[in-house]
Length: 203
Image (cartoon, rainbow, N blue to C red; front, side):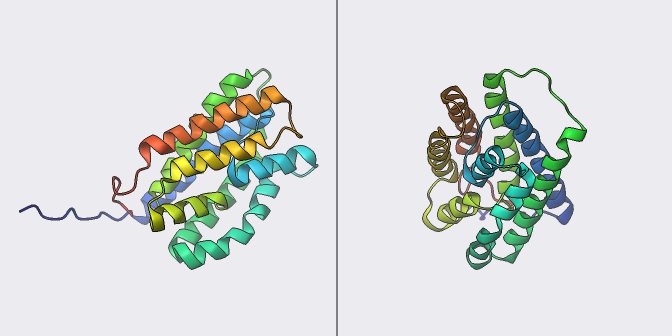
């Protein structure tokens, strides 16, 4: 008779390093997208839209736009998840603000930015998800639906992201939207393949 597998729990150090490294990866992907004037999905996509249309920075908009979603996070996902998510959102906002002090790109192929930026963000999201954190907004909704109804977070996020990017034609040119869709597919491919309910047991 097989004994049920014991669920390992992440230590505080493991949670901290995953949130820091994950948001750092995502901030680099955001920098590539911003340099190429691309968009992504979720609340980050909404933050990009507002950033491109106003003088506000991505980091400022991203932090503020996430504030209404914490209520759902507390109510449905618990304080532990919410605190981790708040820290992740805060770190990404800060890293995005500081990114220009550490990296400057003179020339960047938009297709490269879309694919590599999407993969970097996907890897960062995977780190956060596996440590029971997210970047707020639509991530909270997709994780909640996955936990409650078994709807795959990666596939649902992909559908939402592609819809948001496709609706951005009034902000950027059609080529940028096409490349942005490619980036959204690359991002969510990482999640769809690697983030499956029940496969990863550490909490």
